[in-house]
Length: 183
Image 1 (cartoon, helix red, strand yellow):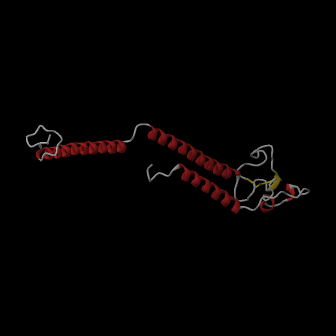
Image 2 (image 1 turned 60 degrees about the horizontal axis):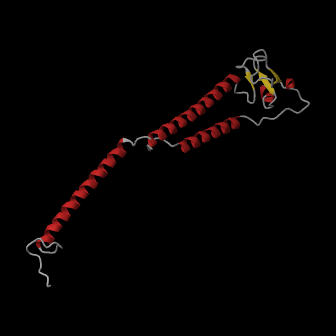
Image 3 (image 1 turned 60 degrees about the vertical axis):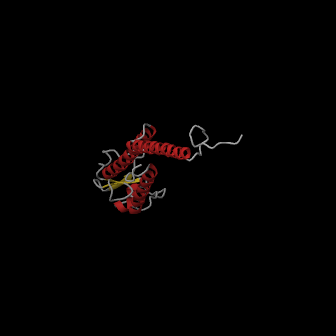
């Protein structure tokens, strides 16, 4: 693996860390979501700061009123309040920005997952397939070194045999300097 490219575990850990930091920063910006007391209706709140801390209430800047959040829909309908003017949770974040931010985060996570999967699949097929250029070069070099070693070994053995024959240390009696044995 290239030292410049991170492995899958570090990418996953980085993505998880980034997601936790993003959630912590978003949660740190707003106040805790609380529900309105059972007897208090959302329409009694007269400003955004009093309305949005309650999870069931929605503030609309277009009409300057606090209404019950329509839980049957994920997003409030345009007839209730335009998305650019609707606030829920915090006054500084409208629904359009929330949708864009969530789409960017989801897209980034999705692209990261796809990249990690493709990167892992490509690495596995490259490693499990034929060896790469460097491995082939090292294998050829090892084979050349082994062949030269064998050639030197044969040459050395031939020289030693000649010396043994010259001084009569061979077991053969074909040469003229072989020792006479007593019979």
